[in-house]
Image (cartoon, rainbow, N blue to C red; front, top):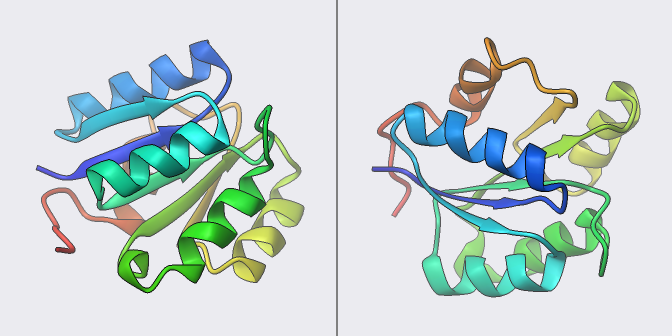
Length: 126
């Protein structure tokens, strides 16, 4: 089973993302701020991290930067999930070495397909 950490401060968005990922067979852990998200990533060693860019304690770019600086986390697939304009979010994703970008509001009919482009269901990275 794929393990995912969702770093999202909006409770409704977090729960929706969690529900969609669980239905697709992911084991999901939620974090509602950047620091908690980083701790969770270090503790759970997920395969996939979905990060909102606008977090209350530190921005998503900082979270992604910390993950990408760690050699032991280089295998992680990182997807930005944001309400930022799509082109700006894609630029940010390229700049920070992300594997994908999903814009909000998420389309519940396409969300798992969008995640699957980055990490096909059942694929394990470690």
